[in-house]
Length: 425
Image (cartoon, rainbow, N blue to C red; front, side):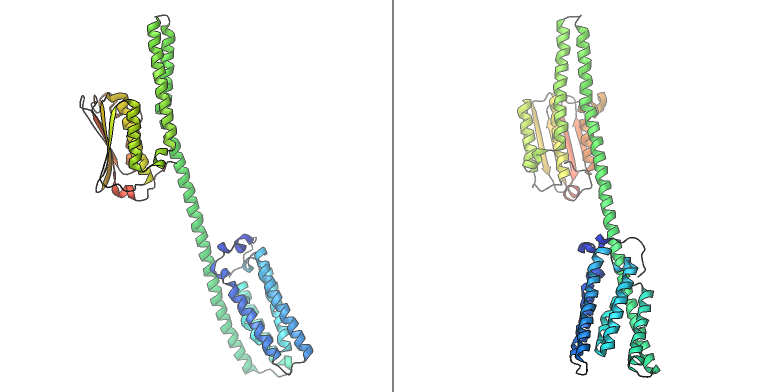
């Protein structure tokens, strides 16, 4: 129980939740101390040889001793634990010893109070100081039982008392060891909690960074490209004013169409931050609603089908599959020239699959930029990245004139267990 010279930290003592196990058991040792004091008073009242005035002195000193102890317990909640303030601890124990010695000078019944006195010394003081006070208490005991009452010293009795003092010091070492272990355990728990908090902050910062990067890609590949296209068409329209009205109208019409598509992309970016459709309906119904709304807006017949028993998915998995459906349908509208679309959500034995199939013009994968050309610079690439984050994959099947099928599959083991991925708000 070494002494620390660092400033006391009252908050670590006053907050019950932050106390170590030894601090929380302090009331037991206070109870032991007060019990010894009470027993000493009881025995003193039963001593018929004790004069009345001395009995009053015994009562007064006992009350003072109890107040001294309880006052110290109160003060440590404001100045820090005894272990953090050696001068305070020395004054406290010295006061206990002086008052106790005054009591045994009045009546030997107060020897019983030592059982609380010893424990207090070894609880509040470093082990070397506590051992010194133990020897002091032995000396006071020996003095009071010999010279203090006019009796010649009995050295055999002195050796007996010294042996008992040695046993008491060993008991004090045991108390000291328990306190040290309790304090170290408390420090370890605090360190683990701080480490966990730091890890949480790091993960939060990494998630924010990843989300910013995703938004940067989204804006760059959609809005920025759209604005560039609008500027080019407007500049071409300005140059075409000299060529004739039809050419100018054509460029303005293309600029208008690009602006509308960019507005739609902007709405996609905003909606991507908070997929409200997942909050207002079960996942399969949310996908059905997306397909139905898309069909109504595009004029293309679209049918949604669910197969297998529906079960809860991780929110990140639901977002991934929902975005895949939205992106696949968007590509159908922009590129496929399809008349019919079939969207299917399949709950299989070990995997969940979402596929979107159209009967449009199709394309040859790898030609003209491959997937990137079809996706407008981001869509299928982002879809593939999201699927891979979930441990899944994106599959595309297409042939010119044969339509296109886009399928996203995520393993069942991944979709049901907690994931360490960036969850969208």
